[in-house]
Length: 114
Ligand code: U3P
Image (tube, rainbow, N blue to C red; front, side, top):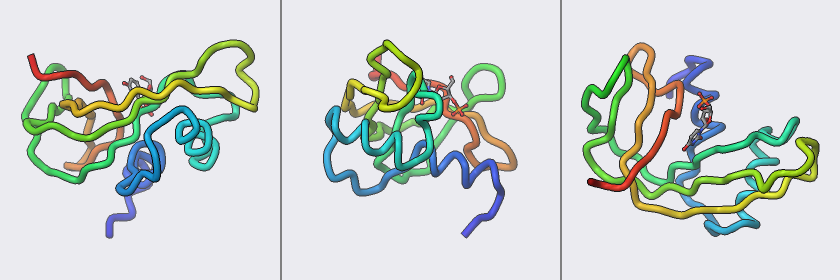
């Protein structure tokens, strides 16, 4: 177990090993449960896999070599105050993260294999 606060925060925002769904309702509930709705966060990705095989990518970032199951939640717009409404996009994608001391602390983006 690693206690680095930025890493704990990354896991809270971006890691969910066993999603019970990957749809709009999932986003609505998870965004709230993980404390991302005051105000409604615009975009947030939940990662459902746990692999460790990154390579350098751009300025201080790491890109995963393998694909991850991810669900990205996008705020539908309107008021930034709760209740926040989200649109879910489920995918199997490379992810790009920023790391500190070898652990992810920032989720940058995800994309399909070119
Ligand atoms: N973000 C995602 N997924 C995306 C794009 C952006 O979650 O596909 P963080 O606290 O640095 O992780 O870029 C600003 C925020 O948008 C990032 O915040 C990241 O969580 C989120």
